[in-house]
Structure formats: C-alpha cells, structure tokens
Image (cartoon, rainbow, N blue to C red; front, side, top):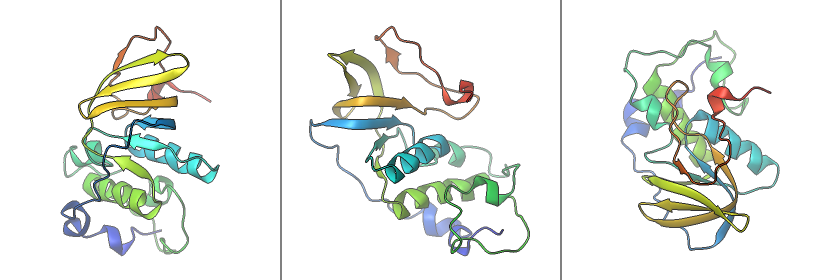
Length: 178
C-alpha cells in the first residue's frame, strides 16, 4: 500500500480552507464526539455507517494533534493499518510506507471531508453537565446539547477531560479495553 498522491502534497491540504461549519442551532444532537483525531473520526465514521449523524467538536482542525507533533515523526505502523476506510480506490498495491505526522493529519482532515462528517472546528469545551438525561456542553461558542457524549480528546498519552460535574466515571480512549 502507498500513501495516496492526494496526501503527499503538504500545500494541498494544510493550506486549504476547510469548510467552516457554523455552530448549529440549539437543537439537541443525538451524538456529540469531542475530538477530531483518529479516534473521534473513526468513531463518527462507524456511527455514520450505522445510520447515525454524529457531530464532532474540536478545539482545532481535524487531525490537529498530529499536525503539532515534530515534523520528522513517522507513524510506526504501515499506511494500510492507519487508513480508516481501506478504500481500494485510495490505495495501490505497492510496498508499505510510513507517513509523517503532517501527512497523516492531512489524511484525517481529508477523510472528514470525503466522508461528509459533521465537524465544528475551533470550539473549546469549557464544561459538561447532565440535566434530565441530556448532556449540556458549555463552549466558547455557545451551549451544545446531546443525548450521547463521546470523549475522544487529546492524543494517546495526553488526554484532556472537560470539567465533569456529572460525577460519572470517564474513560479515555487510551484506557478503553474491549
């Protein structure tokens, strides 16, 4: 498998302007995912395949934590194991390659676009609460509500949890074991 040519140009994806999705109305979402890294994006994509339409909120852009890692960092596992959809049209059958962190960030951002995932960028979650069975998120751009909340924040070794007044146990993706 090789890195698709659409992901090899840093200027193509890192400098383009992603569609800015306005903060949606005060409606109650079915599912909100906090974090647009690989875990949050994969969760949203799989939920979408099951017929849901989750909303992803991120404090930056999709894949942002990868973009902030050292430029020389390469993904340890081969490209084929880091692909979210194994789209046969996206991959060729040559040797495995290891991609750098910026290219992987570009791939994650492009995956959101190609998969039509709903992502609201540059949103800081200040706190979460649960009232009457509904999660209430206070953000720097207003209040969001949802029936189910998924916390996919931070990258693997540096999780961040918004203020949790629910008094419920929170499990970060890094601690989840199936």
